[in-house]
Length: 184
Image (cartoon, helix red, strand yellow):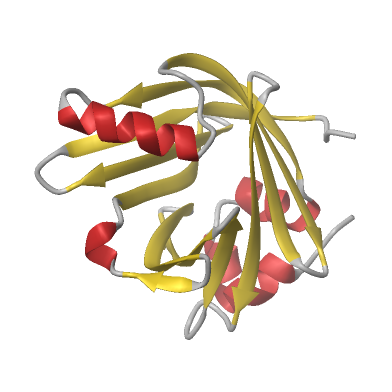
């Protein structure tokens, strides 16, 4: 069912998104494809392993990712499934609009305050703050995140990465996804 929740948040900047991203966030749908999950080396790899476990991510390597996107009165729902088993569900609730607002992503006990930068039609998340069980967490305790979706050769390029200064990349996954049939 079409929804204007994302379009309303972006306002006139909604048309700056690639048309495929616009349609995905109006109609919802399912994206599927292969992604590669990687962890850092050395100490970064140890930290990445713990972070991946907490995020319910699979072991490093190639995996089939399915992302189901839907809307309701609560917000924007994302259900990620790696290999049909490792599920990661998020609820994104809009606050205000792109000029003065943000999104709150809730995944289990963690909530992140995020804004979006539109770069060359792509959707780039930027973290503004994090809470754990409702308690603000100092930014220096939280790994940096880099997450985006762009259109590449008619497909959806997804990239999610967490890193720490000096250590570098802890854990990441990235790949090209295609539009598929929505999950039941």
